Length: 408
Image (cartoon, rainbow, N blue to C red; front, side):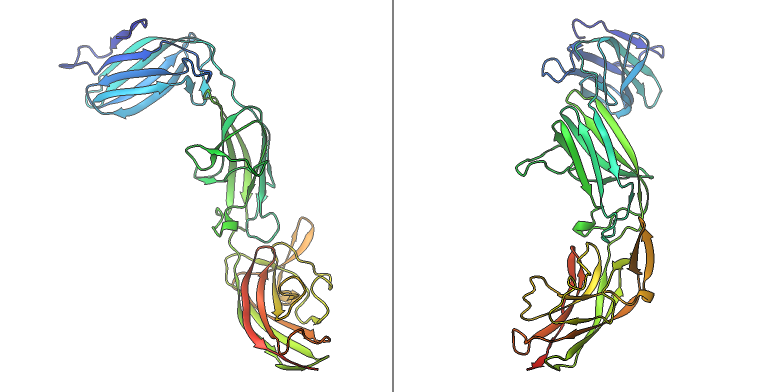
């Protein structure tokens, strides 16, 4: 038995099993620890042997009789064991004081209980947890569907001391959805990852996470429902603090639409004449997709583009576009049109603004016109159509390239 620690062996069921005791050669070394992460006597080594299949309990009792459980009913087979105790119990380092440690074992078969007790002194403990000030989640209603409206949430906090931090989203069933790593504050900054890809060692300061539900990587976001954003900070001594905030996910999902047919006509257009386009588009995804004008049927001149008509590029909207050989406008798909007519679309009022959506499974026809008033930069240029998800990607590119003869 360990020198310097008074040990008491108590048999709660009279008599000892034949042979060895249920638990024996129990010790804690050292019997004075200072759990403050300074590298000196921060950890006590708990050693013990068990002779039969049992359940193990290790706990500490303070001067007021409060129990702090380090192991609570863990299954153990016969053998020799060792555990390292760094002073932390459920995210809180024990405060300075005198404690009675108890190693208690219950035999699986007979229910016989044996326990060994001793004394542990804690001095110079760091029992104050790290602080996550100004913990904020915005917005708290999140619609991850790449329509450009409430597609992302910002999670931020101010860390007051160095700590290991993990942030995740927990659903009502207790399942965790990783948020990822915080934004770096300097380009050269490299995070030191811990055992979890979402757990990272951070220095004091303001930290922010940009969460999109994984949709920017092509993954489906968590299902619609009620969630809790959880931030856990653990300092080097083992103190842990937890901050939580509610989050609602609505209308989440990967948007997907496809061009079904494309037709350009006529294929011979005199200078000053008009090229016509008819395109059918279907929403083949599981969420509504947002669109905006110019309306189907709008006529451009070859000197105009969607910006000159006042329908500027907007994150998240879908539009049918036309591009052509020799385009010198500086951007693809100079001519763009809304998916369908206003009466084909569902109107939604979000944050006081009016938006239009093409619903899942819905198919619409887009008609466009381009009056060619300038000589083309290339003889007999090809024109083609595309489906543009603005500031996200070109969903369908170079659909039905058609050679157009322009007479001049």
